[in-house]
Structures are given as structure tokens and as C-alpha cells.
Image (cartoon, rainbow, N blue to C red; front, side, top):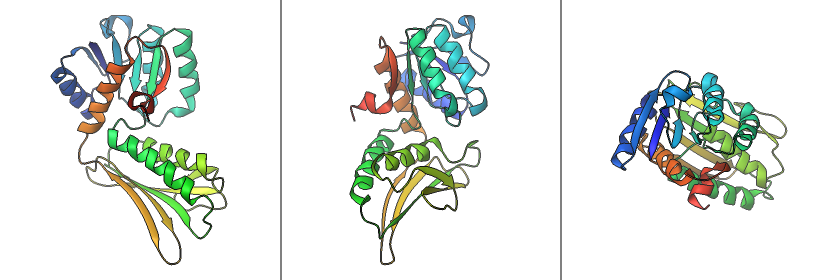
Length: 233
């Protein structure tokens, strides 16, 4: 496949390496806004940039009828608008808060545990995420996805909030530390014990591989998708 990379930071460079190892041609490596000219006629775009520019980047690609795999978090208040643009331009858009296979299995495990705990009132619940000091958004998109998985099964919660909470809010504690690639934990605590599920990423390679696999999967598809569609979860 011909792959254009929009956003060329640490993740972009790892995706570049993995894509080429899997036999793909990287035809653009952009730090600027994509256009019909600088995209260089790709089959798919993989977008990992910054929250403040992600919407315009994705919009420009979709309006040029190029499917987009997007891993940038922190801009999702505009996701519905992007999905509308995808449909209007008869192309495809896939957003992932995290492209790691392990994290997507963790999402499924989190929902199963939330369903088991929904009627056990002795336990409170909170989330914790730890990332490197360069991460722009807090909480992480992965933590928000975990929270939304809990909301689907547990009516005690209807919103998340950073740090301390009240009423029906689910607390997310966001820690920024050194060069941590990403650690996410869900805690259920009672007066007598604690249940914890946790995912720890050792490096960014799993995220990058997942993004390339998603790009391979989305070719010739139309519509809006998530990583669970790629993995059949």
C-alpha cells in the first residue's frame, strides 16, 4: 500500500519503520497540513499529530477522498463532524484511542468486569493513567475509552472527572512521569479488599503496529470504524 503519515513525531517515525518492514511504501511524511499535492496520492493516511491540529488534518484528507486512521486524542468533541464528512465523501475513517492489541483486549475485559460489579454496592471504582511528560491531553484517550466502557454497564456512573469526584462521577487520576509509554489501571475498592486490572505498555511499537494493521484492514472499505472492528472484538 501507499501510506501517507500526517504528524511525524516519535509515533510517526516508528509507524514509518514498521510500515516499510511490512512491505508498504511511505509516500509522504508531513508535519504541515495535508493537501492533495503533498499527500502524494496515498491509499490511506495514518494521522498521529497534536489535538489542536488533528481535526483539520483529518478533514483535509477525507475531503481528498483518502481514508484515515487517526490515533490523535484530545479533540473528540468534533468526532461526529468528522464521521459525517467521511460519509459525505464516500471514504473511511477509523479512530483509535489506542491501537495496541493488548489494550483492545483490556477494553473488553474492563467491560466484562464492569458488568460483574454493577450490582455490588460495597465497591467504589476509579481509574488511573500514567504517561510521559510530553503528552498534551489529560486524561488520556485510552482512559476515556475505559470510562465509557464502564458507563455502558454500570448506571452508577454517568460522567468522568479528573481527580476527586462526587455523586455519579467516575474519577480518573492522570499522572505524567518521565518517558512512560502508557499504563492504565481500573480499581474496585471496598473496606476489606481491592480488585485491580492493569495494562502496561513497555514501548510504542505495539501502538504503531496496530495502526499499520488498521490501515491494511481499512483499504477499500467505506464508513466509520473502530479498532474493535479490525480485531473482531
